[in-house]
Image (tube, rainbow, N blue to C red):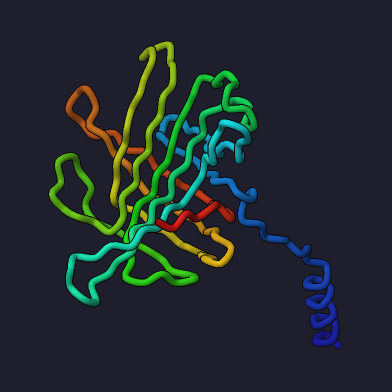
Length: 206
């Protein structure tokens, strides 16, 4: 009898468990968080803009080789901006902060799904040539610092491409990594770029 009661309880628990629908972010957008430690900034690329404006989140893929047969490689560059207060109007006023995120990597083959993990030591002046490069730029105004325009660069991160669809020319996936810059005191500041999701952003093959 106890076993029957336990079985009924488990059945009731699992049948009442809500179905959570997973959505990989807004379509044709890239979103995430720039975590500075003491504060963080939400990041959501501007929507596809019409007229004289441009696509503010794109992935370009180009093929290159070093001249030897069989040494062809692909260069993948995911570039996005979050500039405008009104994401549908590239002539609108900014809201006190503008930032951009660029993720660059290489691969031997173009596949529908793949991952790139880079754990190289990242520091200013490094001679390493890592397989992953992250460039994060932020422009903002603060009462303490005034106008700031700071670029951070890193090589430590994890890129998970969930779908690369060459027929329909889009790419979807997620990313997290760390970027660095040398501050005015000779130290190193770091920013964690996390919870990045890109869903069906346009791919341009070169």
